[in-house]
Amino acid sequence: MTVNVSAVMFLLLGCDQLLAMELHAHILEKPGSQVKKRLSLQSTAEIQSCLVSSGDVGCGMFQCFSNNSCEIQGLHHICLTLLHNAGRYDSQGKSYVKDALRCMALGLRQRFSCVSRRCSAVKEMVFSLQRECYSKHNLCLAVQDHLDTMGNLVQFQLMFPAGPFVELMNFLLKCGDEIRTWVGQRLRGQCEQHWGALCSTFTNNCPLSQLDVPGHPTSPPPSIPGPVTPVDPLQQPTREVKLEDMTPARLTDNATKFDLSLS
Image (cartoon, rainbow, N blue to C red; front, top):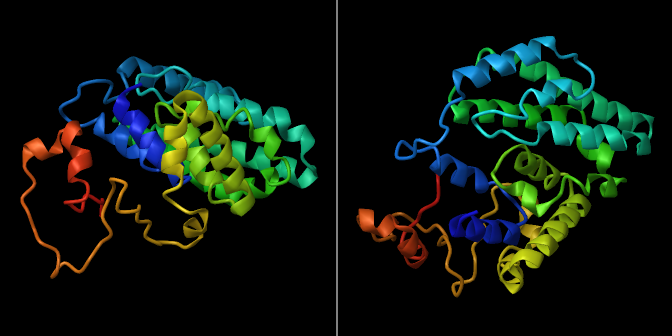
């Protein structure tokens, strides 16, 4: 785990959202890095064969992704945890969980053969299926009265590298105040066990109430390095960003000088 990832995680926990971890994963797949940018032919063939032979019910389909050259980890563990705890839900909650998992399994089988072998494309296929199936089959309603059943999934160490666990956390953080607060506090507490007061420092930057408003800008206090609040382009001075300004050592110093937000 690198220092850069740690710093990103601090900021993300501060805003109770983990979306920017996908940016870090994307940076690792830039042309300058040759590490596992594509599924190997062997991994592709093995996954395809596994998907065809696995049943639609249970977690066998998700186990097909347990070992792959794109490091897409967590689908099988998520499935096992949800099914193991489904007995604690009411009949409707059980139906939500089983339907969501079946939606994911069928989607993986149908879409995998059509997606590029690029890791970014495979990951986006998996993540989009998670968002689609969890929302369509009301996973929020299934877990809202049984948050303790999600404890094995809401684990700080599972957030690295960014993958299905992070996507699940992103989904849960949109399930309402109670679930979002529970997830945020749990991850924050685990973060503090690893890095102490640093986590608490960053978590004070983004009030929870701001997350309920779509598109609401979140601006950190001026004393904390971070993205500046957008201003009128006519009033904002322009400056050429030099290559040396993009080194990790200078990103923090430059954060208040440039608008580095992604459009």
